[in-house]
Amino acid sequence: MTKSVRIVDLGLTEYQATYAKMRAFTDARDSASRDEIWLTEHEPVFTQGQAGRPQHILFNSEIPVVQSNRGGQVTYHGPGQITAYLLFDLRRLGLSVTQLVNRIEQLMLNVCANCGITAGRREGAPGIYVGNDKIGALGLRVSRGCSYHGLSLNVEMDLRPYEQINPCGLTDVRAIDMQAFGSHTIASVKPLVIAEALRVFDLEQITERSESTARES
Image (cartoon, rainbow, N blue to C red):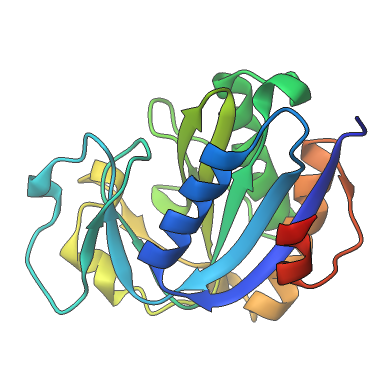
């Protein structure tokens, strides 16, 4: 089978519904199922990783906290952040989990570089950073050799909710977004995320139909 991927833009979504949807997608897939990348912005939500520690949520607010089964600690999702869910058959792509993490980070580094932002990795703390400030995060789950969850890249956000948590369990970083370095927007950055995902994972995009048609094929 050609290494191809269907890219679906979900728009603005509620986290729990999308989480349930990608779990169901992964549970139902077989060796012939097409890989997909889902792009979304979420309504404001804190998500806690499978082994997340409650002390990293510093105080309660009106923003809901949702338990998920991805790796990592607590993070924030909200409008102005591109979240990309990578629904990949890792065996078919010939990727280990470590290679998947490295390529996700490289994807985000490349997007930032294309926007004139110099970002880097941090040993022992997945994601990407500008200096000591975190601009991109990742969290994954692998079931029967297939990945879900993915990456979040801060583009043009209200960053104040990050003050309520230790982002990804880190007590010595703050969250920033791409707009701190220029007039970057979701509309301008999203095509770069798609292009770099295709390039970094060496995939060919399927011509998109409607989402409902895609689910039936």
